[in-house]
Length: 315
Image (tube, rainbow, N blue to C red; front, side, top):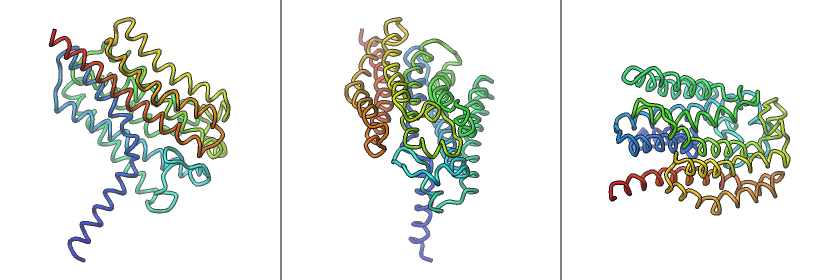
């Protein structure tokens, strides 16, 4: 076999496993880690590049491991096999459904990635403090057992906590060895939005999840206007949390810039969801807009904190 052929196979394998981690969703962990780190820099003038990079690697590893574990358990339960309403944002992994990857290999990959995240957490525990070990273990356990938690109606709560307060506070603590209210308040809108992403993605999975007993909250409420109203509440709660954070001086005034995403993505997404919650193909734009709302609201919150820092320097 020629060298170019070997390289192509290795590249294909790496690309395959990279895609299996659902890279388009990894911003769910990247945004809160950057947010927590930026808050530490702006308010405490604390920023250690090595710790920041390790926190990102650890967070991404835990999230990627969670995504792969979720695919494994959904495949084993049968929900991904019987799901007839797969979208680019929901419905599980084609790699398992089509036999491209073996379930055992997927499980091993998940454990390796979760192990990397835990190892970085142990390093931080050794050099910084035990509090980070607690956060890391909570993240790893919630990630690996997400399907079990979802079946008990706790999956949405676990996601909100893990990708909101856990990530933001963890990243902040890594830099400052402190716990304060500012990163906690800043994590609330991020938590609402990532929960909204999970929530809207559960609508297309409703029939399959209900059939196999994966009784997450959308299954419990039904594919109904009641479930849509909760989604609307999560989106609107995001902007209410930002506004209240600004009013009570926990967030800088410049974080108002994040409201740009309300007319751009959030409101159109809510309208589409309200009108098409029973029609999966027409619901896909709402899924996409929810992801965009999470991504750009998070980015603009980060920008708001950085503008505060720049303004204070100039003045």
